[in-house]
Image 1: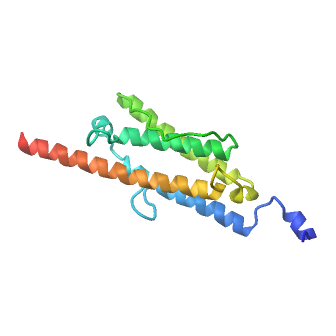
Image 2 (image 1 turned 180 degrees about the horizontal axis):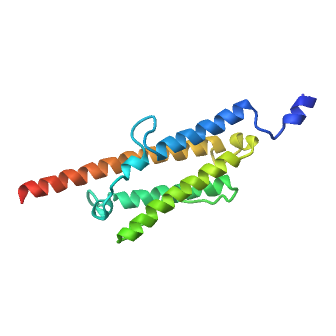
Image 3 (image 1 turned 45 degrees about the vertical axis):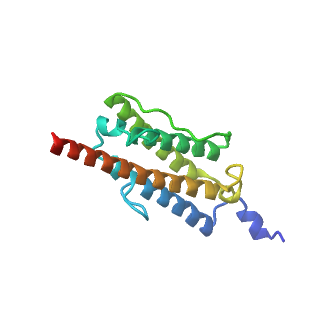
Length: 176
């Protein structure tokens, strides 16, 4: 049943919509920042990252930290485009690492820029968008929470890869 109050508030964010929007942005910001619900965030995972460490892979078929950065950027761009209404089909993507310190700096800066863009877009979404399809199988809310969870998963991999790199480097120094 449509009431006059319902017609007046249609399309406007109510308290529940504002809370959902705020919590999605907070979860994404915490994950991208220094700490999320499960572990340290991306900002700490990338702190003092050297070029050698960024390019190192723990073994054949495993990804470097730089490839993880590029993978995060690829999917953040995908979700941003979905939120902007420019959906497209995609497959897993692991863009290759670059080779220079300047390239690494650009990759990290680009990832930060994508996060800011997505954050801004989420804050601008109309309230009714959160329950609407954000992709072929998920609502926009699920898509956004999934993106932050995806970031958290790969942040854990970045921490692990860096830890393995440091252990290997330390073992090499002891054996030399």
